Image (cartoon, rainbow, N blue to C red; front, side, top):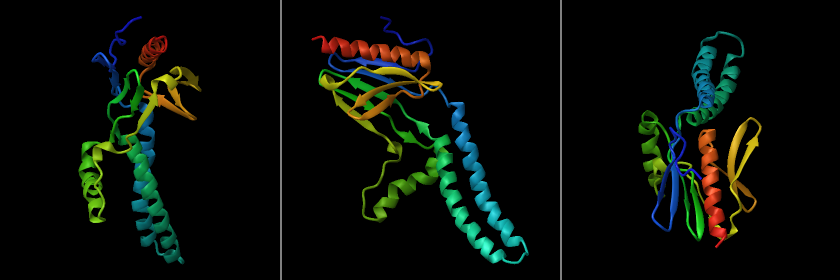
Length: 204
């Protein structure tokens, strides 16, 4: 079996004799990520200009309308900020570590681009300290790690879900997707490598 990742792949492979590690980073921003950026930006703009426009309008009942609009503006800011983050966030390196006892999958840190990190980073780091709690590390936002015993692991499944391809493994009732930002040839190569390693361990 070919041990070399596809040409142009971001997957890196390393082994120290006991642990085998595959790690990768997204090849680039997927066009779909621009969709939440667009709607998030539009909602933030509307939350600013719509209350201003109503406050300038000299019509009966404008005070009531303005109050309701301000409530909606707050909701729009929250939703718009979330959508903007979903489009702008930068994914760190994903990795999966394999050894004789366990399989460890790390989604990698999810961070904001530098301009937004300069704005929100201090809040995440120092805000909890004001409340007497431990500060958050901005580079570890939404990071998740999954661990499973090797002897309990099933096959890594490569399947079609609608129009997209998915690589996953199961931990109990949870289905964990791996490398959702990899390209299909990379995902196919990684699935073959993982299943070959797993079969070699279970054959012993």
